[in-house]
Length: 514
Ligand code: 4AZ
Image: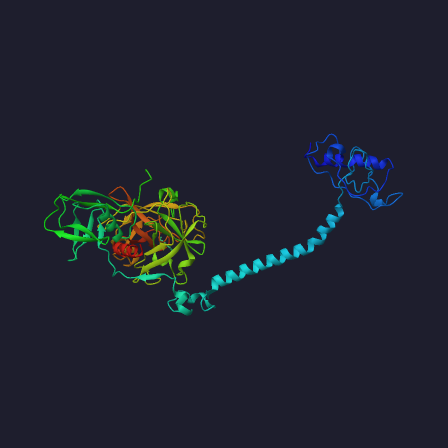
């Protein structure tokens, strides 16, 4: 009842109209308020404000047209009661009086300036956005020298701003000269350290402790809490050593013969590649990020551009060709993790991007990259690292591999996949692959797919991980999506950068940047 506006009109107007009908038309003096309960006994006092009532100017005789009491509508109250006069009755407080038309005219008067201000502000915002779009796409602003330079001069290898400002936050080239002195085998993660005579030595479990494990993992760029165990040295041939820690650096002390304990160290630097899945890309199927929690999306200026994989909370593995000429500005890249469907909102900022010195723009060899994030990822069910393979990892032809990504699901298709896709493919021997690719497949590349076509990676999958179930029942990354002739074509399988030949390059960057 109270919420019905028609009922409200009746209750606030009729008692005063009745007074007017009695002929007692007098100036009612200062505006006063009629308590609702007095104006209409059926309403409770505390429901709504009484309808504002206009008070006419003081005059005698017949009221002017606008001041006449409204003619009651048959069967109901007047729709627009208009001005009402009333004689204050004893015991009844005069109504609170407002000039409704005054309010309307005030609104009318404000309408034009308000609309003008809103329009001007909206135009300024649109102009601002247009200027930003033009600047972002065509110019770089040198803050120190306060000048604009064309975008293609940003990160072109030549200083165009004062203090080399335009070349400071660009993709960096790193050669292979920095080598790490620690490596882990594929089968059993057996630790080896390089001796001063440049031979790889197994590490005896004698005296090896948590500090030794931490120092060994730091050598390959891992800072998480490592785990280690002792394994029999009986089947191993080669050099054996003990370790000592000096200034938190690991040093090898070669011994003659085998370890006193008869056992060596198996080391795991990070809890990686957990196999959550108990049992598309082109010809693939939708998957959830929890099945491939190491998969990330590399986004350039808010658009998915490439895939990548999480190695540690700080480091992402991807492909060098993702950072084409004109896309080498580190601050324009973001890394989104933990979502099957991309949000483009919760993405991490990038601190540095590294590609091999030997990578030549628009060419196929050495197509690998490392991204260092500005802050650590926090691991969860959808955000986990992938394991790197051991230095001696060697897949058999026909081995089953899984590749994931948000790339096109149709060759030449206009858009990236909205949900993460996965496809299971087989390792194709390089000799077979090279017959179709005219000898372009190098030692450091591998081919995977289906020779009959239909199951493959495509544009937008580049940089993503090609993985397999490792000998330790953990999932490891064997390849990085790199190139191919079209997508899913017969006899044109996908080509991947092998991870093993780049282990030293990857771990030495992670070590230096740790
Ligand atoms: C690309 O353009 C691309 N079919 C990636 C993978 C393949 C082809 C193209 C393999 O990023």
